[in-house]
Image (cartoon, rainbow, N blue to C red; front, top):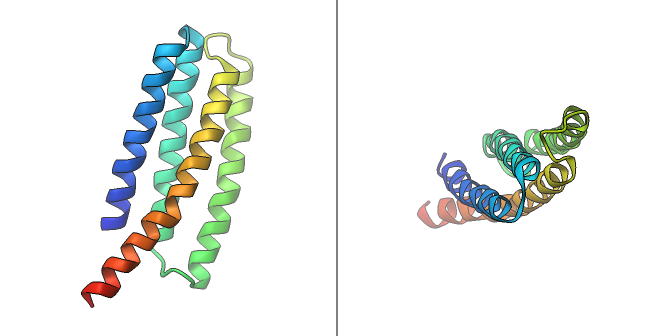
Length: 125
């Protein structure tokens, strides 16, 4: 639980920073696209990371959860592209670039959060 809370805090700050930057640099549709994509990326990653930390690292269950969330991320990008493509009030390019960029950065944070949790467990026990 501690690893998930730490990951949630860092990912929230990162997504909020991206939204703040997008709000400053974008116009109306671009802002909505960045905001929408940051929310989607944040929610998908928190659920995916919860699935990872609920299983021991290196187990078959962990590998299954990891592969499943890779597929969920791909489907999320495709579904978002499909949902946003017909809307004029949401900028598709800012939305998809933000979504893919945040998913990538948040995926790169996962091993750091997982490793930090293992070091705490081995040093305490």
